[in-house]
Length: 511
Image (cartoon, rainbow, N blue to C red):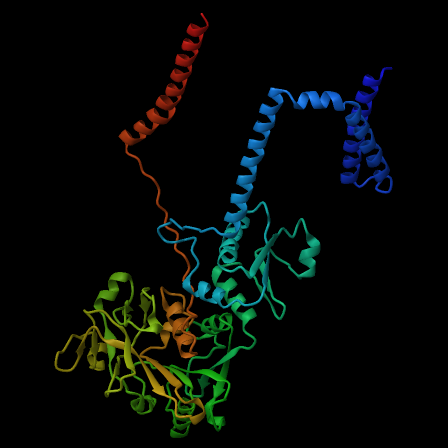
């Protein structure tokens, strides 16, 4: 065997040893002996290289070799540019939502919450990888990660990785766990509203308390019937507030931890002592939401006068509401004042039996914020209304738009809170937030907007679900034929004709 053949054998043997050892390493076999095999392979290749150093030198000096080297260099340069562009775009890129309803854009509420993230947050979501919800969840979480560098996420199939699911106590699909170094939250459905609220709960160290006054026939947050407020309670707690009952008759003052006090549809008189406790609460910076039903005498009018709010002894009639399938005593409200509490709120709300609420006096901080339609009126003759004979009387009734909600901001009387304000909102109806109406149209979001504003967190408004518009492409007979001829006949025919022409000229050039 001559030296040239020996060098070739050593080269092939070294390459085989390196490839075989690499395969064994990937398979986890003979890990203790692989270094010896790799060393032997490297030695064989080095001997082959120095044994053929003369041929290698001559090959490198050829013109064709230089051309090949230049080609290889340009290929690697192009690949390097692609990698660099990808690395830059991964860190500095922009997303554009071209859908008409902005279906793939987070709400302002979510973006506001994400701007407040100042510590690393990790989201672990559990979905079946083969299911349709996997891609949807990934798209949603991608949006969160795009707007917040402090947020990372991981999608896990609990069937493939049961250990991780067991560690986080995941027992169902579509669950997610939001974790930070300080807190952890769990949600059972990965929607934008639940995910944003969970992030908010992780960011907040404590929960604000919303108290619901009891003892005067008010709506109960424990009542799951149509007239109850259990749905409102669930929405409040999802927004990271704590909802509690407050029996004011047994108290000496409103609890100091009350962020908001709600008086929801009282039917009995509020006594003077209770009214004074509410006044004291307002003077020290408290916030109150009062929902008053028509045809009730509860003493609320005298309570509200110092704040520039008047309660009308009437009921709103809107005969145009029947067009939308509601009773004429159920006006649909879509006109709102330009105020932070109604910021970007354009969804209509439905109010079953509502009375007028108006601003009285000359207080600068009193604003009427919601109005019924122009064809409605405030009916004062309840007897005619019961007889079905109600009609607009310009002498007694008020022509629409009629205000049904008024807010008042007063300067806090507490010396320790100089410059702070107390807030009050009064609605002429409590049915709109009951279980039977809470999820109708914009009622839920209106109620949560009000609550966030009263808690002096105007930037946290309820998230409206993105609407999905089904817009099919409907082609006429002529358009369908045009698409068929262009896509099925003309384009393939043009490609075929081009090939025939090129082939013809090549044959002609050869001949």
